Length: 608
Image 1 (cartoon, rainbow, N blue to C red):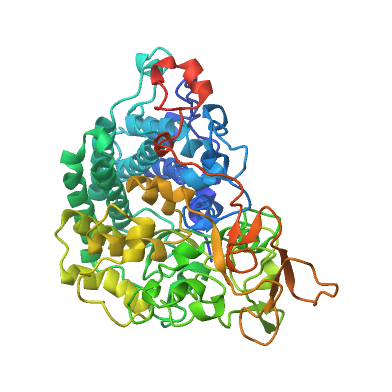
Image 2 (image 1 turned 30 degrees about the vertical axis):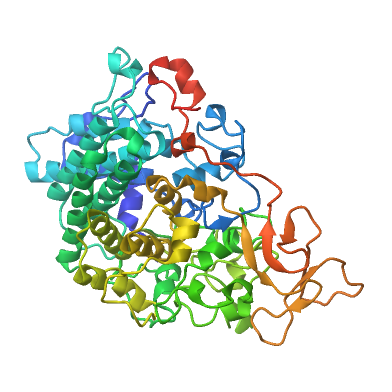
């Protein structure tokens, strides 16, 4: 798609004026020409383009579930290994294992972890945007943008570290706040709420077909995301002693989401039918304006691309993200009933379990008659065991053109906020409050399921708890509505960077220890035709055949890493020989050791 070229050019110009940022323990240095920047509306616009540089990249987003309970991967991340393999020493800006901070934090970047340069940039703008020759309406719009990003910035900090220092001005070297301790979560989050409310009230209404600019509706969506996280975190993390305030936050989440819904500006995209509408949201070069509220766009002209195809097809690049069977089991049947109610589902082959399911499944993984494009031809593309460890090979962000599989060649827009999340935020907040109605259900979860081809249970609240969902995922949940909203959230938002912090806020970190299982193999040493096109695809062997068939991937199940659960049959297991461990300390990042040495007043998070 075409990027907002005006904004890109403004960013390049801003290099000459940019306020040099500092970390909390560094000497602040101001080099911008204040008159040039703060003396005109064009100067304010120029400065405000720098705010967007903090946003996640496309790669950040589609790789952000690299640590999650629903996926297997190339290696067990240090963060989940027993002992102190992952420590404050390795948690500063990057990770020894490459993708750990991407997965946990959403971004492999210091500013999304214990970095503060962005904050100084925002605070410097807010303190200096005072020129009375510029109308208040103009100044408050740009202040609204700055406070939007400050709210988002601090939300991400609290997600990772809990208590953090609240700083609302640029600090100089003599400021005592520079070396003070952290402020209480309550103070920080109340300040975040004040910032996002200001942003909603003051950012201008604009028509942005590129979906790359912050609007009041995007600010409302962020508020619903923030308030839902904080409300559920306070409700389920009873050790904080903040359960009495949880409902206030949940009410704010519902209200913010409903405000977006009431604008009438967005709706669920259904233009490509049940078989393709969902996936079209993730593979289109131009954002689907009907549903996408904010995206990271690409541009061939400006050489701004991302690597989704490379990441989700390469045997050597990335982590080889593979869904696990326990999660795939949560996809409903097309009639709206749980798949796990089907007699014998445990021993059902991949070919059979993929049939008659929620149509988002076929738009999320390779299955059935899925094909890819090679030149002018469409070629069958079953799950590729050169990539997947479990057989559940994702396609959600990767496009079908094989020619772009290697390198940063993707130009499909990657959503940051979309309307479906807003609907789910509303449904979950109302369910947690105990005030959700059948009408609420129909316009949120029911509408999402209808798009996916599900035929029943769209307009009535669930009344029976799914025993599989309860036993495997949520043993402490007895309300079937809450459980079903969580099911829906996992499926609808899969690989969009939400899962780790959903697990965190629900206080279900133990899910990260779930065994990495793949599809069921009836018998080793027999080839399997995964898409039933008459051509064999994979062979799980105890003894490698003397003659190997071309095009078949041979998997040794005598290895320590890859096995079948029953020896020569059963579910695929991957890396069951390497332990994973969740402890409560992992609900927070450790404060990086280098920063503790500089400022001991910060204190370390418990257990680290």
